[in-house]
Length: 142
Length: 110
Image (cartoon, rainbow over all chains, first blue to last red; front, side, top):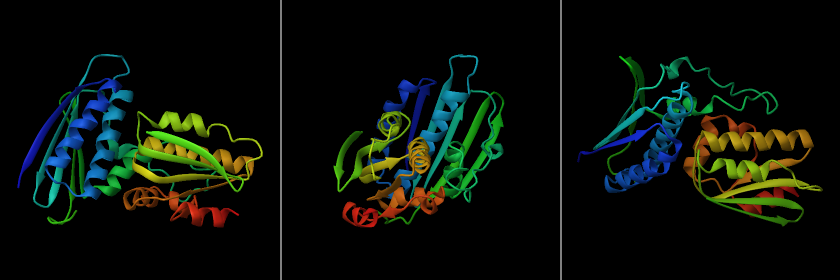
């Protein structure tokens, strides 16, 4: 079974609620298992929020595009934005062994997504950041 | 996202229901920004939490740091498998005591 969707938004935080609604509707319709649903929400939340909050420091209008495809045993996502170049592989990793006092508040989101995704890649294509990730699951998982 | 608060056996229990994401986490942040005076311990009951993002985790970490510096114990309970996994992957499981449910948490915090 293949199911696909394209979700487009402008770089406004107010768009996030609609994006989540469309995402959830797609995941429901495509019968994506629980764990993958949760983790794709994390990825969308993280990358879309980061693009909106940090990708356009000059305040320009921007466009973010999310493409999702469910195949039998995986969910593939490609997220494109026209914000400033940001390579998630260069984001510093949080120190997981630090004590409570020493743990920094930031840096978690990208780390989470990289750890939870089965495949994860980034490339810069002209004026766009392109993040691709895959979540795998058993075809009959719930 | 809904937040409820009550006090049980001198433990301030904050229950969160729904999604804790970029839109909603600032609400919880406000709630947890001040530790009620004479609190013996704080418990975050996540039994109704369906989703948490890194924004939500940041709020939890901030609250944990605040509790630590005030000498007040903080624990969480009721994590779903997905939320628990996120706690594990982010290293929070070694920082913050996790209990299966409120009853167990209250016993541990007694």
